[in-house]
Length: 159
Image (cartoon, rainbow, N blue to C red):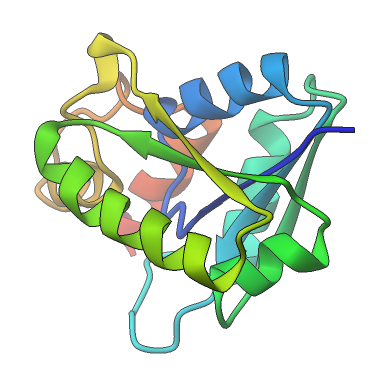
């Protein structure tokens, strides 16, 4: 059985993330989306909210599950018996950092491979940070997020 872990903060989950999730679900038997709880960051959404949002957009994907975690991503992958770690690449600038992580993870856990998926061209510029900046300034984020996620982001900034 092929098991992939796709880790990230998903604050919020974008259509770019969703694209990677759907494509991974088509090639792997089981996909575990790992929502990282990073105490050093101050996310817009709580970990519970991020898990809930991911569950809402992946309901039609039977082989996808959502979990939260903290600590080393590679240990989260081991805990889930993953043989693949999924990493999305938007641009060449992502590649250097992601390659360094993949090589380090390979030393720590040689049984887990990293698979890089290039984001669809349509989302190659997209990041959660950009979406939050646009929303905070009152811009239209409907092209970047599922409708229910966009509404939740806008609601946060209205408060």
